[in-house]
Length: 98
Image (tube, one colour):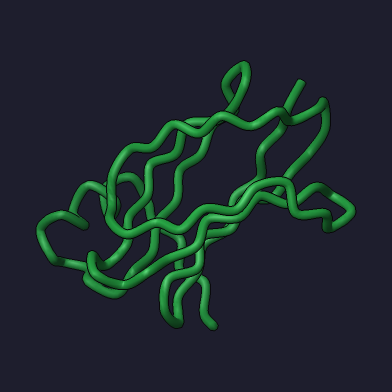
């Protein structure tokens, strides 16, 4: 799998089919969960996962289309890694819970 990182301009251009194969993930912690902006090629089943720093799976959800999502999950103080896998592409982001 290859990792592609989007700049904000590229993420905004995604809806214009400029980057049809790129996966994008913007994620931010909120009290009681997190907000995610997800960019995938619609129609390809994708998987969003959140892992603790020791590798424990804390959250997993199938994603079917691009968009804004809000998820409820109880994350304790620490560092987590969110991964979005879509076909052969993936993106990963760090989540810091203070």
